[in-house]
Image 1 (cartoon, rainbow, N blue to C red):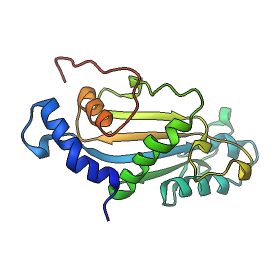
Image 2: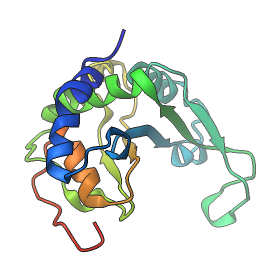
Image 3: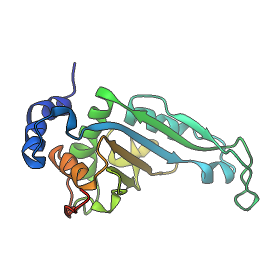
Image 4: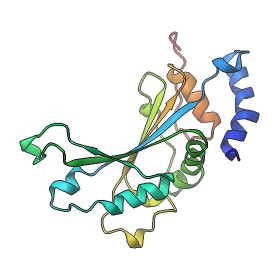
Amino acid sequence: MASTLKVKYDKEVLDHLRKELGRKNLNNLPQLEKVSINVGIGSMVTQGNKNYSEVQENISAITGQTPNVRKARISVSNFKLREGMPVGLTATLRGDKMYDFVARLVNIALPRVRDFRGISVKGFDGKGNYSIGIKDVTIFPEVSPENLARTHGLQVNIQTSTRSDYEAYILLKALGFPFRDEVKKTNKS
């Protein structure tokens, strides 16, 4: 069964993108490729708390899949970091899980942020990808604040099929992202 956001993309967003960008070929229109969710646990591990299973459970509840543990490749003495120590958790979403996560992020999680006035367009990287930093993971309803010993944030990276920030902005805006600014169309776009 397809996600409701995927159905919206197929029925409404494609027509909007076709008119906005002036293209007839559906394969030439921008689309979401993947969403990566990252959490840094290096400070948690170096402070003596070797148990990061709570963070792992939170990411599993939010994404619907178990995150991968990323380990340090080199030792850095200034950060009390040794090679092989866990430093982060990452989960990559594609397909229906990706569309479900984006729908929950836009419609449920972001409106729960205190004093929310929209997200900035400064998260675009110049190549059509967008990053959002979330300071408190409790904005997701899957995470119970009573069960958290220590709050943590996460980073969401959204990769699109286009190489233009303007086209990615048009796509994400059509999918319901609440931007407070606009991306200006440049000659490169």
